Image (cartoon, rainbow, N blue to C red):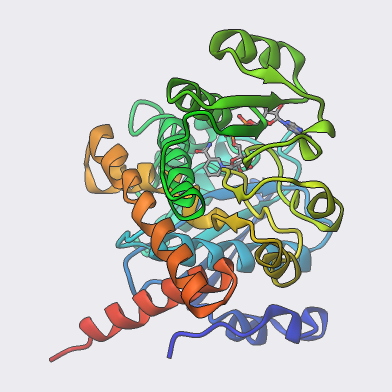
Length: 365
Ligand SMILES: NC(=O)c1ccc[n+]([C@@H]2O[C@H](COP(=O)([O-])OP(=O)(O)OC[C@H]3O[C@@H](n4cnc5c(N)ncnc54)[C@H](O)[C@@H]3O)[C@@H](O)[C@H]2O)c1
């Protein structure tokens, strides 16, 4: 049975590494250390039932090794769920390099890291994540071919991610309003960066009334002028009358404070980890009658774009695959209503069910 225990059940600090791996149901961890280059990294392969474990490498100045271990375990497990719910033949993995990305980077460090990735023989495929640049990844690529998202390959994933969010939002509208048209709907987009701007473009084209906010004033002004969106304040966005709230900047914006203020009936955006506490706020949005599109399912366009590179498919394929997010979100929402269970739980269950089912297909005859 593919199952993940509740992570809060265990006091992580008191457990040795293998107990933590077992707790999260991980297959393999690779601890990487190299004194010559200063590399300290952990590669986590969570689950490879569906295919090679794909997930980015994050570089972060973790306060402790335990913090890095916890992060890589959670992130890699999250990739298993995202890849599964998106119908990709990919497992979940992630890597963390411990250190300050402004001071420890070097060609040698990334090439050494690439050798460690290569030693896994394709079981883990890496990509960029927080603190890693395309140049860093091109160094990794000198030592291994198990890298995606390189310059000149599948390119910027943001248009694909934004398209997935747009169609996922429409699927929510279909369930909430009886039509998937966003014409005339008031949509508040928080963060108009790479993904947010493409989303605003699609929404404006469809005739939605778009409200935007961003901490970066010049971007905010440019996007407002380009697409006729109305600017609102950074805090005001939680208080305005709106149909749809689209978080495209930060995590944890669905919390006790904002839920008391938000007047929307749909939450659908690109940001990761939108629910501050999954169990508490996932139930709370449901109690308020809000349809929430689970973040890892609606923002899967990025990993779909990476997968297109693994398979040698083009950008048109990636867009078509991202269009399936409409169906995925629709299925999750319908099942959540039918079973009266919050969407985040249903999405996790559906991801687990696919892994379990495909696991049986792969058993030897
Ligand atoms: N880029 C992708 O393909 C992709 C894929 C999956 C998930 N995501 C997630 O979607 C979100 C957006 O990604 P992106 O690539 O557009 O990032 P980005 O950095 O290009 O854009 C984020 C925008 O949010 C703004 N911002 C930051 N703090 C803010 C705040 N407090 N209030 C309002 N705006 C704020 C920034 O100024 C920036 O313009 C992130 O959470 C990211 O993890 C992105």
